[in-house]
Amino acid sequence: MAKTKKKKLSLAYQPVGFVLGWLGGSLGGMAFRKVWKAIRDEEDAPDALDPDRGWGEILLAAAIQGAIFAVVRSAVDRTGAKAIARKTGAWPVKDEGGRD
Image (tube, rainbow, N blue to C red; front, side, top):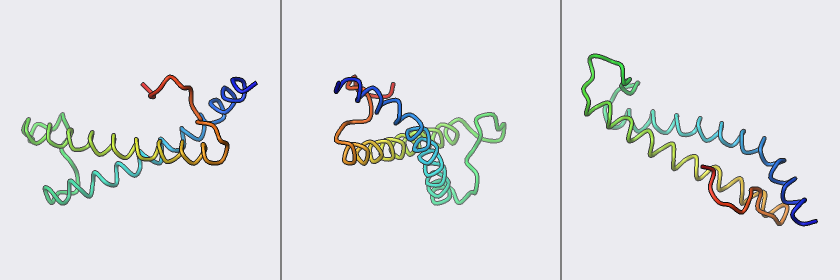
């Protein structure tokens, strides 16, 4: 019985997880733009295909962006899972661990 409830909770959490993922992506994008503006005083980060930008600048932007997105995504996912667990008494995803 408990296993069935947990499976249903995991399925019910999927749309919530999707919304949290979208929210996390939006927050991560905003945070990255602010950080890049503070570092380089530019509105837009370099694109990998921009011929006027060097390797260092492109890789620096990618590394910063990746770190920010990972931190924000993890924080949003964890907050959502903890909130569901507090409300239902069960962790909202399988016991097998991470998303990947």
